[in-house]
Length: 334
Image (cartoon, rainbow, N blue to C red; front, side, top):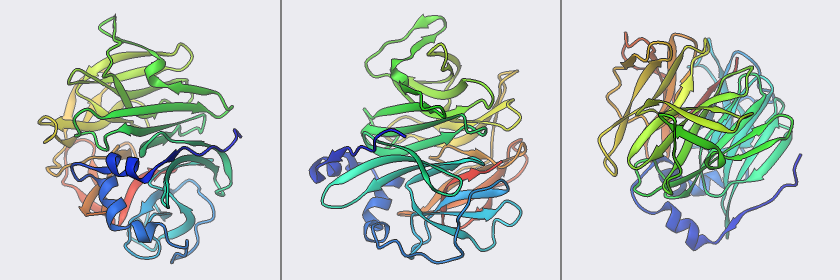
C-alpha cells in the first residue's frame, strides 16, 4: 500500500471546476451535497462482501443510502438491495477488489481513489487530480484504472482535460496514459490537446482498450502496458467496454458536436469492424457494462443527482428495459 495522500483544492477552485453545463457529477454535487456528506447512516441489509453473481452500483436513492455502494443479485435486480458503509461517486468491482472514486466535501474539497478487497478493507489509495469520472478493474483483478477531469467536468465540455492512470495488482503504477507512445495509422500523435479516458481491460493479458481524443476526433485505442504503447484501431468510439467473450466493444457513439453533443450506444465487432447502433434514443453519458454476452447495462439520469440502471440487448433486437431504480455506475461481478 502506498502512503495515503490528499490533494487539497480550495473551494473557489472546486466551484470553477463545477461551473458550466449541467452534467451528472455536477448536479449530484449541488442537489445532494448535504445527503452525500451526512453521518454515514444508511438503510437496507448490510453489504459486507462483494462476490460473483452480484450487480454492484452506487445508490442514488434520495435518502440515507444516497452515495453508498450497494448490490442486488443478478437474478433479481428489482429486489431488495444490500448497502455497504462505503460511499463512492464511481465504483467498479471484481470478485476480489472494489475500485472507488470519491469526492470528499467540506471546508476544502478533495478527490480520492481507493481500492479495497472484497470485504471493503483498503488495499491501496491515491489522490485524484480532479472530479471522478470513470474506473475499471480487470475481471481477473490484475489491473485497475481511473479517469478524472483535470479541467472541465463533462465530455461535452469544450476544452476539457482528463488524467487516466493504470495500476497493477503488484503495485506497479504505469502513470498517465498521456505518457504512452500513441500512433494513428502508424504515425505518432503528440498534440497538446490529447486526452485519454474510459479504460477496459483484456483479462489474462497486459492489454486494454480506451478512448483517445485530439483535434475534434475520437479513436478506440488498444494499449499495451508492457510496451507502453497505444494504437488507434477504430474511429468515433468513446468509453469502450469489452464483452465477456472478448469479441466486441460496447461504447458511447457521439451524436452531434460539443457543447451540444449527446451519445447513443453502439457495439463494435472487433474481428469484422462492423457496428450495430442500439435503439436507445436518450442521452447515455456512461461507460456501459456487460451483464452477459447478450445484454448491456448502463446508467441513465432521471433527475438532477438521481439515475436508474437500464438494460438493452447487445444485438439491437430489443428496446431498453429498466433494471435497477435509483442506481448509477453498475458493475457486474463475474
